[in-house]
Amino acid sequence: MGALQGIRVLDLSRVLAGPWAGQLLADLGAEVIKVERPERGDDTRHWGPPFLEGPDEPLESAYFLCANRGKRSVCLDLASAEGQWRCRELAAQCDVVIENFKVGDAARMGLDYPSLCADNPGLIYCSITGFGQTGPYRHRPGYDLLVQAMGGLMSITGAPEGEPQKVGVALTDIMTGLYATVGILAAVNERQRSGLGQHIDLALLDVTAATLANQATNALVGGLNPGRLGNAHPNIVPYQSFVCADGELVLAVGNDAQFGRLCELLGMAEWATDLRYATNAARVAHRSELVPALARAFLAADRDHWLAKLEQAGIPAGPINSVQEVFADPQIQARGMVVALNHANGSEVLLPGNPIKLSRTPVEYAAAPPPLGQAEPEWLAPRPSS
Image 1 (cartoon, rainbow, N blue to C red):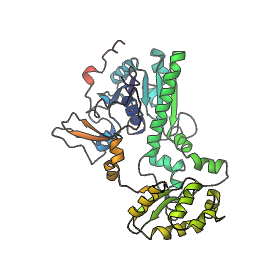
Image 2 (image 1 turned 120 degrees about the vertical axis):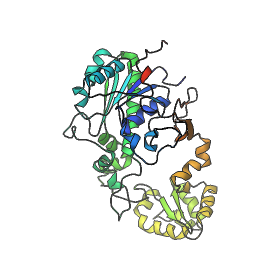
Image 3 (image 1 turned 60 degrees about the horizontal axis):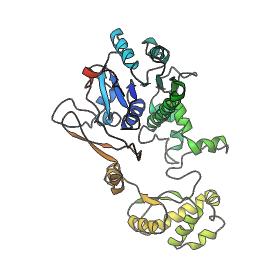
Image 4 (image 1 turned 180 degrees about the horizontal axis):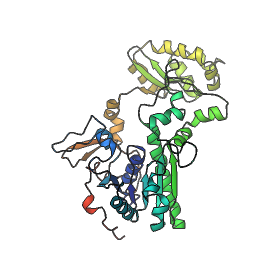
């Protein structure tokens, strides 16, 4: 039995943030019912190529496959009175609802939290929007790229001399999905005491601001306005990429003892006692002198030579892998981070695994992402008795 066995989730969300939360809950054992538009479904079903190839149509986009594992799909026209009624009937049988409608749209359809909890007081209702249910921006549409820009993430991403950059995946959406999952699980736990559900209001902009982490406190506590440092770290030196004779590596020196061993390895033992470099604070202050000297040292040999030496010395370092190299890595494969599931179109689909390793109730991959409307004949089936 999964850790969330017996929890039923109604996933009314689309694209990535909400579906990511729904997939995580499904991996943990919840029953997740995904409501989609008739005929077209979730927009991401069409966000390709690439598409999963198989002997039968329709094909599914790789994008859709990344966030909808373990769910059942039903089609409802939520613009119609019939679809709204059916959705309310289904919500009455669920523990959790996840939605990402524009502010006000759920209320117009009678699918907002006050409407649904009137019939189901224990319902936990998670709303995901770009800017939240309150505030001057609440009616604006929100997209990951837009919020990465407005939330400061782009201003600290990229080379110092280059333009602001977005992160290579929709990180704001993904982090919002993770925060949504945490909020839902907290509300499920609290319901055991009160018997009541509650409304969770999540905004992509709030999540982006929160996950600025040390860069946020560099600004709030230190009075700094962080800028772009490329692959370097604002608070740790050396902690960045270096070019070797035949490629690049990443070096992550986390303390003074590791720096001392690095100095020995590079034949520069005197750096460890040099007052400019002996402590991390000094190294940050003298970054402009130390980093070029390190860069010259790493050019003297091949990447694999340095990686072997660094590992032997207990200094954190690694290659800069491509995405394909990541999933071919023996450590990733040993950890079960590549999952093969049988898709209903007759083909096998490879997906990234779930990183949560529970000892007694491990993650289970119940099914591949569903074809559109696959579960309609059973979608109003009564909850099994426990």
